[in-house]
Length: 87
Image 1 (cartoon, rainbow, N blue to C red):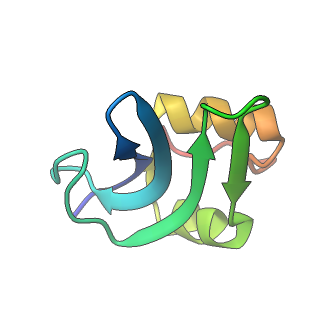
Image 2: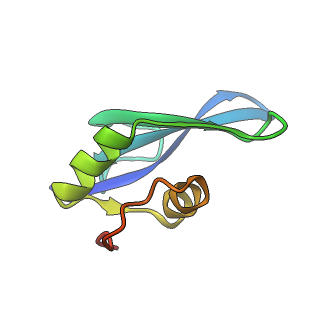
């Protein structure tokens, strides 16, 4: 089972917020996931980001691949590990 760290959409129509989750790479976007790693709310000004660094680091160490969107958020928040994570 290949694990990806990605976002899943939550919220109502035209008022989205996103959870950062560790999920099987073959699971649907809003489907089953393994662990909740944080959330991202782009509707607030400024955008609200809450990340559980220890959980993210754990999944990366286990070999989880990070999606491009999550990688950008982690980099912007300065939470990306100093060593390069698998793509």
